[in-house]
Amino acid sequence: MDDSKFGIRNKRGDWKPHGKIQSNPRYIIPFEPIKLFKHIFGWNGYIFPWAFLWALITVVLWFYLTPPLEQMKNFETGWIFFLLIRNA
Image (cartoon, rainbow, N blue to C red; front, side, top):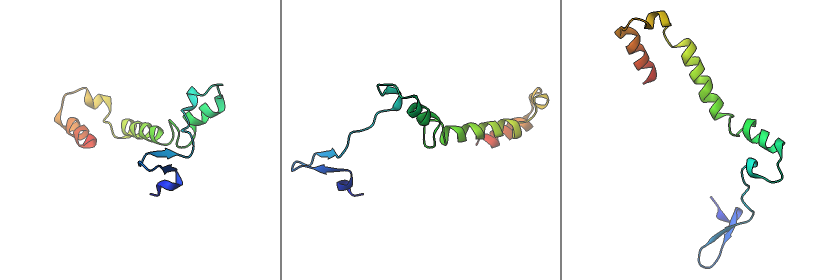
């Protein structure tokens, strides 16, 4: 990585960036709702893609890879080991 693309160093070796660091959109004054909406719901934002991906995986595991409640009413080793293997 070339530091000179992002900033400069003085004689002492202290690094100074070219531009200012942008703050999180929810702390920007005056309030800009479009930037906040893009920050939360936009791609590479707060929710998408990673938080949405993890939520989707949990929903799929819950509905398709969890034994039915009728089977889990009885304390048996079969469904317990299935859940242990699934979660490993």
